[in-house]
Image (cartoon, rainbow, N blue to C red; front, side, top):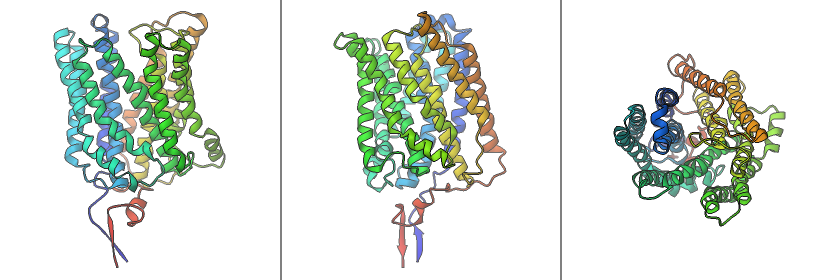
Amino acid sequence: MNFNLRRSQHWAAGSYVDLILAAVIMQILFMITAIWVGTSGSEFYSNNLVEIQYALRLQLSLGWMMCIIAGLGFSILPLIYDIKSFEKTLMRLYVGMNIAGQITIMLGIMSNNLELFQTLATIGITLLCTSLVCLGPPAVKVFKSKNTEDGKLGPFSYTLGAITPILGLFIITSWVLRNEIPGVLNTSENFIYGFFIPLVIVSLIISHFNRRLDWKIIHVKNLSKIFIAYALLLFLSFISEPIMNRGDISIRLAAILQLLPYIFIFLMLNPKKIIFMLKEKSQCNKMILASILWLPVIGIAAYAETMGYVETTDAMMSYHRWILIFGVAFQALWGYASYLHDDHKRLSIHRRKTQWFMILLINSGTIITVYAMSLSWQTGEAVQQYPRLGIAIYAISYLFILIHWVKETFFSLDTWHKTPMFYDKYLANSDEGPGFQTDN
């Protein structure tokens, strides 16, 4: 019995490398921009706080973070769904527009000129949003092909892609109408960090433990129910602030709605089963594992900030989003990318090296941040700035990630394989993966 390939499912496997290198470079440029804002551009930043904050946070979320997410999608989804729409031209178009958008925003912020900033920021945000809209056709194909998926991720796998182009349209519309609709920038930013990013990161976590490692932390039949419940709780959390500001719900209820999504999904990720598998000496990516532990802390921080137990200045990002980005998203994204890279090298999971120093750095920075938040809670004094030690530690971890990926990309002595380990089963035969036909 012979198996003949109708078309190569794995043409895009490994495309994550280009996107991750782009993410690493842009991550460094983002840090340079943030440092400039805190030093040379502090006055310009203070005088134009809302718009510059928004541009910076888009540069973060739709920039290097989205580069990693897209890189993982381009590498894995064609293997699982055999989607022809994931073309090299589309990938290059996405990368080009994303990088150009980030650089344009950076130049606008560092121009120290309001008119020039607004022009360049509009161009940059348009490029970032257009790059998301371009992902629409393959996202629709994935959604239509959801029945071919292996069932270990359910709607966490195919629903998010459908949201991506809608997100792009929502963001660019919000920026254009920022002077006509009060608070629209805050609403769209809340949608990114309060709804989209938490959904994406939890999807990666479930993908790692349920699909890649087959730990069965969530039963297949419960995936749809959990996705709907989690998405609904995130949406209620998203709308709780404007409803509270109108006086329709109490502050305490709004705070509880901020807390619930993260406590719920932490429990649904089945920490008891994860602890059991670790006791059985089962291997997993430690960065992704560490990211789970910070989920309830996000909820607690959101509750404390909504209740007014912890106060920050307008120039600062809220503590719960800071923890979401660096404690959870940062680790889950880089951990997932690292594990996929080891799959391409066909390394046994027992031979994989844990980047303990990097993990220690990232989590130390988050611990310092949480400690500063707890001090504000205890003393009742408003926080004026994030701990500089924590920021310095994050910056060092950025540098080590850059060094790690340059080493893995240009100086690695391991053999790199086109089809990653474990994902072979999607190419084995027509029963286990689309894209093949059997000749007797």
